[in-house]
Image 1 (tube, rainbow, N blue to C red):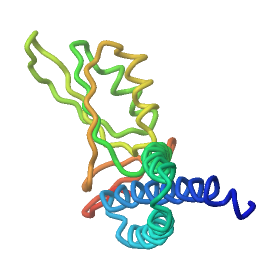
Image 2: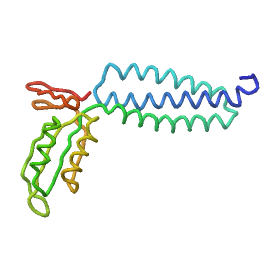
Image 3: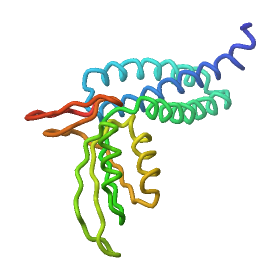
Length: 190
């Protein structure tokens, strides 16, 4: 870019891209920390801060151009969005899925078992009477598969999903079609 265009176009683009990258890395770093990935998170944080320094240096050197402020803010917004998209694609960790249905849940339990999901079921009582509670721990990337099974078998079931930090003593599915029995040890969320 020519010497005249660089401050007008190049600097705002550089600020936008740098900020977008550093905020994306920050979002991913926070996810890694929350999932217990202690070795990867500091490395991501190192790169994140290097890129942030590049962005803030450009802003500080060009305080006379309002477009740089807009580029900085837009980069933050885009980086946040991109970080969320990446987090959803990574689908790291384990989830606890609780399914409550007023109907007999034997078919649902069998279907989940056929797809290699470990399931525990309980008889319970809700506001409108007797219910069945099914409980399973699954890899996060399998949630849509489990939800498809539930929607097919019991479309009116109540489903609650939450993150699991650690799980031990039981059957934990690794990938679709494969499973692992964990006895006497912890399997941390990946």
